[in-house]
Length: 273
Length: 195
Image (cartoon, helix red, strand yellow):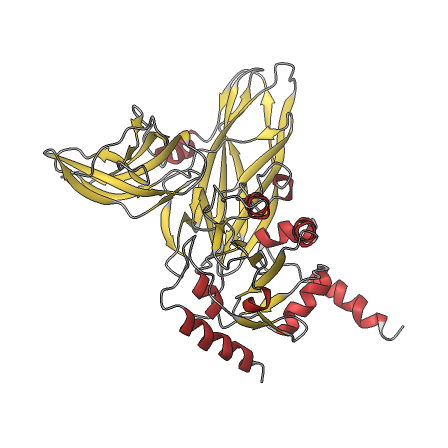
């Protein structure tokens, strides 16, 4: 009994002293009321403790992006639109892409065709949040929308949040490879007088990305990010990154960019300029 | 008193490789570290065997995913039955023989957890994350390095659908074949090195 007591106390103390959350989650809907079949925009605002951070869709060398699994009214994994991340130095020469202080992720849900009265959208957000240590936090997410004639809500807020997203991607570009297919690069043609500020690459299994650089290529200014192809199965994927540029006049722009990356004998090979 | 083995490892590793990190196809750097029972474990003890080195930190959610489900223990046991030696290496600066002993009891780890809290062996291999895996063939060459599997998440639900790269590499080595997917990007927490 004497030996068991400290053990019981230890277990209770461990449970009671569970870590306080490092992220607070708030959900906002862009509709106060919506009709069956309508799409409702949702914003998940994550407020992060000082010195901690959460991750972008491509987390970089460590971590994982937040993941929202819906349970009501239908099960599924939410697709997020992420604002422009920042580059985070996580030590030992490693880099993560993510957010400090606060970030608002946007997603969409559909009001079920048979909904009436009000509909609750509920699920669980799994969020990896790190300082020196990493913690996996799970937060319940729930927001209710009345079912009825459309009534928008928080329009100014949503305008601000949507403006923080990168500009929609234009046409897809092909990744460029060295003749031996072992390295390559994703390229973005800069506007006249523009400079590249940063290039956030997509997460592509089988590639490791280096640092972005600006090059001259046939009279054009090209901003590019090099990659190394890791030994393994052939790759054929389409993925998005974000390019940050600064115009001659000084304003920065964040542009989503679409790339098709295909390795193997049919891939396009261009000698390095 | 506990610093002695770490110092020996530091000197050994420093002598063995001047460049940090090891390429696939290169000889695996030698080391001598203490396990959770205070026993000295050297890579050279396993010459002629297939060895897996698994960078480990019980404080990391990505490592917990593999241990609280029993998945890592089951994988190591499956390949132990085929003669593969599986060693966990803890390069976390706050790790010690004592903390490794506690976690090996808590998680029923019946194989060595090596104390590399000074970080010399981690740096010699270029281990960047936990988990970060290296497969060494019987000739002492690194034939795989990188992620344990294909889904970079801390979610146990992802284990059953992920491709286990280490299992595939081991199957190839045991069959006398070349490991085709010999390098992947490791995922997980960063290794919490002392320096």
